[in-house]
Length: 398
Image (cartoon, rainbow, N blue to C red; front, side, top):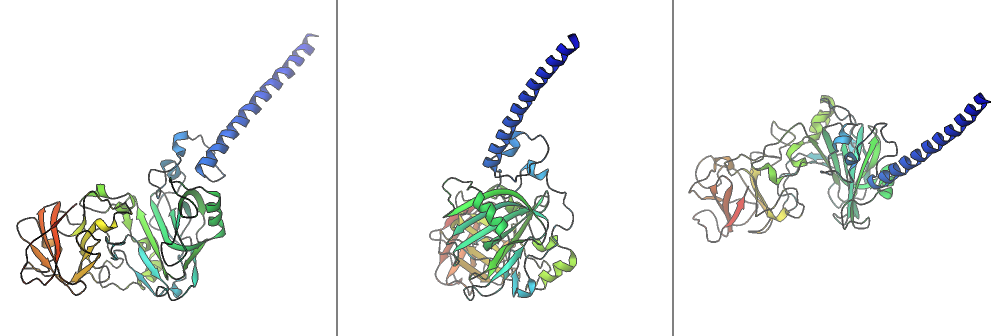
């Protein structure tokens, strides 16, 4: 009898353990389902224990992967991209980094422009492909930003430290559209009928269709930033993470593919892909700010001011004005190495000297004086640089 009694007790106790285990499993499933709903994470979660705080509802920088996400990405090599984003036979030209078009692009642009046609001439669109094995990080979109009904931006990670983005995408692939349909807007006040940012971490294979570009705009943006490479700005604290690490996207292809892009760039300079950060601390050259404006605030464009080289012809210098002290615009000229008129920006340093600039692209003159290494006075006036002095200057800082 005693062996039979032990057998009965063992069966009863085993049943209790199974029931307890099933309850624990159900609870864990419920928690993970809730996290997935909040996070918009892919359905296949890594088979490792992950602290809840590593799965935050949004990244500190939406365009860069979290530390947890980085742990899921590959190490970076010399080549991150392996597929052309579009059929380059359809491309008419590529605008290098550093383009100027105030007020929207008062500072040198952080991306290249890939052109198919002149704006407003055709509604044709072209397939857009993943440039390598990537993970989609963010899909951002808004209505009415350009002459086309909707514009998407696709941010992606190629490896732990190299991120890229396509801007002015006119249509998403069915797979990416599903991510948008199933996702939720991350910022307060956003809706899917106005503007929206949707976080994801979705793997996409090299060469996979991600959308279509062109339409009335006729071009799209291709940008890349590398967290292991730093740009030099006079005051880095005014910039977001992406701006501090911008690189030429074509440098992340092998040499033969890189050459295909460069053949479409018209720039008479050794740095064929252009330049973004042109600050020379202690001189006039580079970016300046009105008040407390920041380079990572999309609402501050009119408060920017830049003294930089032209991105297609670096022998020409440009005063790029977002607004405030005069209308947005550009004053272009050929710099001089002496005197106080149209002086090379890098030669202008703090002191009592006032410099005057005039050119063919803007009427009147602009006069400037550096009052310290981080502050200047500036004014736009009528007339040329025959005789000049301040009457009502505006202060900019770095």
